[in-house]
Amino acid sequence: MMKRRDFLKKGAIGASLSLPLFLQLGCSTMLGRKPASDGGSWNAQAMIHKNNCPHGTWKFFPWHREYLVRFEDIIRTMSGDPAFTLPYWDWSAHPNLPTAFKTGSLALAGHGSRTADMSAAISKIANPSICQQAMALQDFETFIGSDDASGQLEVRPHNGIHMVMGSYGGPMGNFTSPLDPVFWLHHCNVDRLWAQ
Image 1: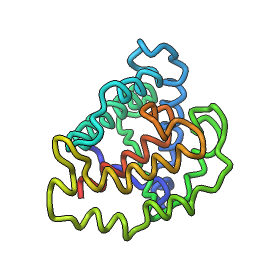
Image 2: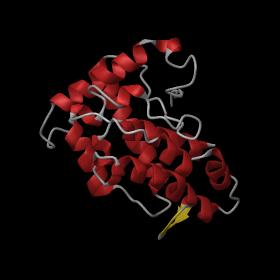
Image 3: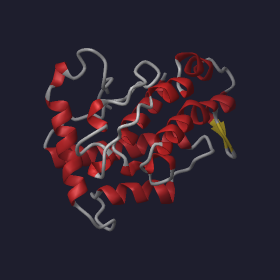
């Protein structure tokens, strides 16, 4: 797997100025493919999540990892960048939503813009101490979950970010959350935390 980069970390974008362009190009191409029956369409990706994602179980993490990898493959194909990797949004270090996801084609998939400042709410849900508490858990099932229960990393901070983002409009608060492009950066960060 190729290495992901922090979307907001100093130098991450500068190291590859084409990163946002390829992300935007791939997303724009997917958004242009409308029917959910087209596996490469934005809507199809959201329906995969809505209909198949195992929330509230240990399967949540490996399922999302595979989902991210397949989405990256689609973006690589549609953008023409064989080295493309999704960046992650480290909301515990940078609670402000990345500017590219507030307005333009990456804001709510081009269906509006976000004007509210969510940073205070995000800081409360995903502050470094909450993330550290989840990461410090020694019991495997408490951390990752079991067959019938969510782990702490899924509950907090993962679910909290979805709830905060969804409460300000857009699909992040429901099972079609992949319709919001910031979903992918959010889940890349959750995957990064799981990998640690």
